[in-house]
Image (tube, rainbow, N blue to C red):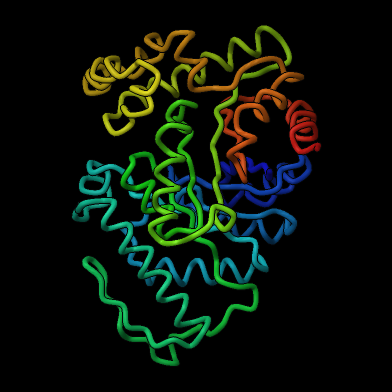
Length: 336
């Protein structure tokens, strides 16, 4: 199981941050589509820490045309010498329409079409296949020599899909190369909903689990002192309150008996009472959605919890902690 670290870096500090994460012992780094571009910092990460896998985790797909994204992925795959993973996701309707200013359509069906279009473009470039993709949402039927980058000596970049709902998760199994399990996950949701949906998608396409990448994001609460653990707990409590306020994230809550809490958190978010969300996240909720304990216990807890399922584990810890602490955890986590 490989372990990936969060790459919250802008261009000015990307090189230094990549070297730091590599020195801790991460196998790869992933960016988020937040307040800055998720692709550009990965160039510097690959240049200054070439041993790292690099990934978008995730980039929002629908505001970008498949052709645009294909060129970006091709360049990063080539530059990183085959270490790039293209992680994409759909985003929710409000952001697609009001932040990105584009039309929203049935997300699972559109994403299936999007990934098939991407793969048709990749196939054209890598194998010389005539580009002739005509889907429900996307149409790509022209590729002249001037615009064809040609075969990538490091292979076609894998496409990983971030998904939460059953339809999107099944799409991942059917047409993507892997699934990025959202950090807001619980074990009953993972085992009873996400994994079966992936397997259904794989079966639909007559594909094997061995040829599919399952990356699980794990929210971790730990610290070297009681004070550090308390601070980490409060930070994560607020994060979980934010996630849980989004209606689309209700299914993982329902899987552990917290579905009825979602409307109240949503109401508080609409009233702008963001600071109050965390107070509704109790201890049982924390246990369901996080892995928490002393640093010496974290690796064992993660292995027991995710070891049977994860090909890659993405660490999500939104608080400050010593690099030496994480280095020790990663050493134990990756030991046989």
